[in-house]
Image (cartoon, rainbow, N blue to C red):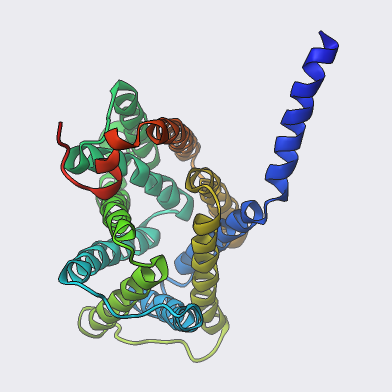
Length: 337
């Protein structure tokens, strides 16, 4: 018995060692940590600089960092067909809306709570995938949706259920904005998956998404912001302002590299560490202690996100054995019998 079990333990140890040796594992965690720092700094500076201007600078730096990458790789900026242009416009519009809503949510509620509610994206992907692509959505998925909504309620703590005078206002602004942002992210994900099938490079997609956000945020800062352009010229806010843009550029670049060179499901699971980092950093930098109910709701949503990712791994493995039956899930074509 001992001899027969030794090889199994050895192979498990070898697999774990190989997993730890993969640099993409560490790069994913680093990128998620940078995202958490970026979001905490956005909340730190929210009373000094309008959120639209923060978005403009952040994605302006990301846009500028993408140009040398695309030139080095020899990727063309030109979109070949009208379908490509339409998909870029639609996905860019939903992505811009998701960014604006999420950053607005960061200014209205704690960063950890916003990040946790943002995990609803993976649930919305399943729901929209079922509606538009006829992907499977079984009873387990429905139970996970209920659990996730329970997590949102624990984080938002509406006054009608938890008491308090300002709970309804907070529920109407912060959590609702982040929920809508998650839905927009999910639509962007499905459109991006379709563009990947059509052969559009992911860097080109991010390039045009960033360009649309730059234009939109500039217009909103100019015409909708009461303060106008108030870029800080001195003090710590100036360095924080620049750090937000640099952190976003590095984090986004690292995450794109990880998704291109690692199993996407593993990257998705590791990305849930964003919630943990956000709560810790927010307490360390801003002194904001998380509410126990919010921690319980966040833990519930992280659990759901991990279960969904594992479920997708198993589903994806099964699809590989029957590719003709699941081609519509990848290409977005209507299901035909």
